[in-house]
Length: 325
Image 1: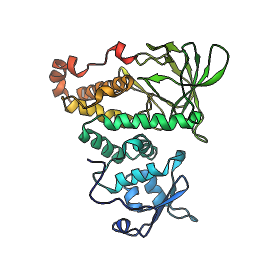
Image 2: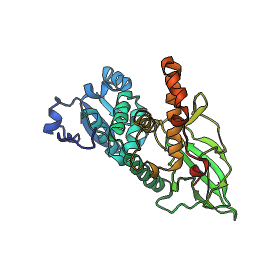
Image 3: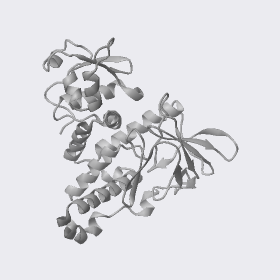
Image 4: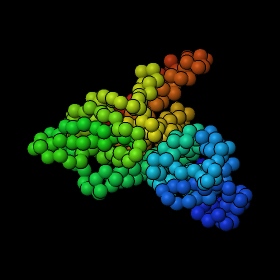
């Protein structure tokens, strides 16, 4: 899998583009953030049952038209189409998370598996690192308008969990209210509440000063309780906070976590730059690997002796001190 292909990507904004016409005449319009993209219904309907139903029963006025939900960006929609049209192309690193969320919105399991396979074939933590950094930039700009976010050591507050992540409403010791965020491996990770989306869920939080004096949720055992919609996926002893958009508590889509967990499961060599990944995300990858191994253990009894012999190596987790840095 690769980030670019020898065959140029179609220009979906031009219905007369030669590369687009190679697949036939476009018969469907995809609207992303007010921009019309011309596509083929047979391509997208093959990846999503929901889109397939819309193709079978088109609107009497607009015809075959699909408007992306949750205000997804146009570059992310184009990256998703490139993943669908090209057999060996994966989304750019900066759009990786949003493309996974769009695929999750429309239950495009085959697209998610293609992305997962592409990450495994790359065998590097670079896409994850760059995706996390880009996500921090975009989400911080959405929440604060570009303001600097530095949580106070004496702050406490409550989280409002949106469909795409967690946002902190903070009260400092001197009574002033302002934006703050939880510290995740030295990077501030926040997500904006989506306007017009499902009602936000309240998350109670008590700040625990970290090693550097900043407050944030502990990666080992955060004091967080969820109320309202959404829920927690549980796999035996492992639990993940999964929001409706398919992202986890750290803002990383579950598909991406599974890709890196499966890489470490099948390939016992060291992944380049993996130590640069924030510690809480590495911990979630380790938990995902445990969940995959437990699933194999329950479904394939022949693997039980192998797993019992290598349990110490395969189920190894980051040290607690490393996770709270």
